Image (tube, rainbow, N blue to C red; front, side):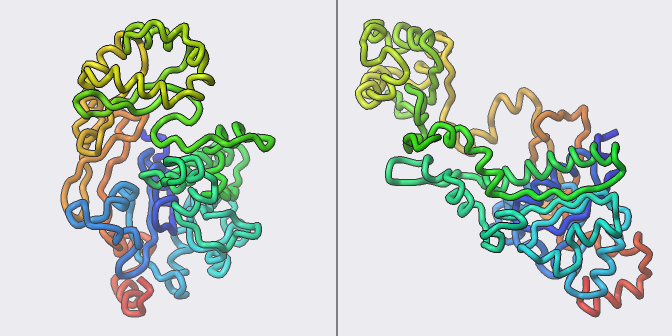
Length: 392
């Protein structure tokens, strides 16, 4: 039995944050019914065509769901929506601010009709406050939360290469829903969850926030290097390949000097005697390290780092990750169906094939509309009337 087997989730979702939240609920065995616009469905389906004509974002965040198309602005479709919610455990939505209130699908309205329903609202800035109605996209939240101010190189801010603000909000939505299900088991009542992308991202920024507390200087933009620990970051070897390494303490600095760069005299150089001093003199120390590495291949550098017990990594690209030997050895890959055929998919972290996580197909837009409506008691003629009216 999967942990969320028997739990029904209805979701009015689009883009990434809410779909990522509900996909994880589906991984755990929940039945997730995704409401999409008639026609093209979730606009994230059109982000790109990289996966045999399907969008890379969409296939990642929407497996194991059932898709029904509803124009919830139409009364007939709203009636269907309430039939879906009548026995639902969780309702997740990330529509524009105020949209659910206009539809009568906000928590204050729904809780009177469905007291056991858990409602999870995911938005850019939260349900109130002066910025409630601002449009919020992942890059904009990265900027608003201060992430760009410490990421990239000096004078050249850089965004994260994946949608981390969406991912953060989706994760907090997911974990809060799990907690609310446990709480409901004790109280018998649902609750409202209000997750904002801004607050999720600011929580992830807590280390640099505390580092800059009381007006102190924030962490510097250090590219792929660590802003406050050195040496910690990328260094080029003699074969032109880059090695990532990270020192954490003075014992490792001693090992680094003796075994890796083979310059034991650096240990007694006062300029490098503490992490703060090494960070202060990072430019001259970088030259020393790069000069030592220039006589070695990346593989030889990693061999020395491993011998010294110093953390290191290769600078892999996406093609390297697809072929990663650790993921292969741990049998982390499986396959899921899509409208365009079979694609590989990573098992959810923490779960193995033995746990039998749901790894069902990515749905086509409205693929399950007729089946769900029949389940709700609509006969073929009633379904056709809804279709003719443009409600589905």
